[in-house]
Image (cartoon, rainbow, N blue to C red; front, side, top):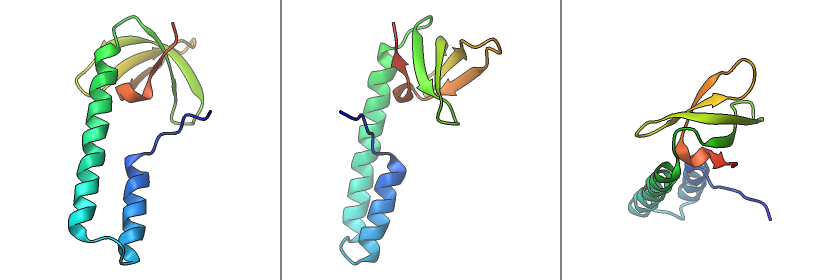
Amino acid sequence: MMDTKVTFEDVMAYLTLAAGMGQLDRGKREQIVGMVRFAQERDQAVARSTLRVGMRVEFKDKYGMKALGIIQKVNPKNVDVKEGSPAGRIWRCPPAMLKVVG
């Protein structure tokens, strides 16, 4: 089974297409956008509440490659993760983007 997430940009593209075809009025579009934003904020809060400094996590970097790292700091909206490579780059990631690996 494939783990796919629908992004806010995906929803907006769909809504723009539907509105262009006359299948969606402005009020309904704004209601859907509000529900998507609420779901995103809820997912972020749940993910953030489970993350702790020192946890090992994996994520995809900006090039789409899997990266492993250790959480350095949990901020209100993002998490600082130090990559496990020799360079030790620090990434700032949204909590929902991280997966705990043990």
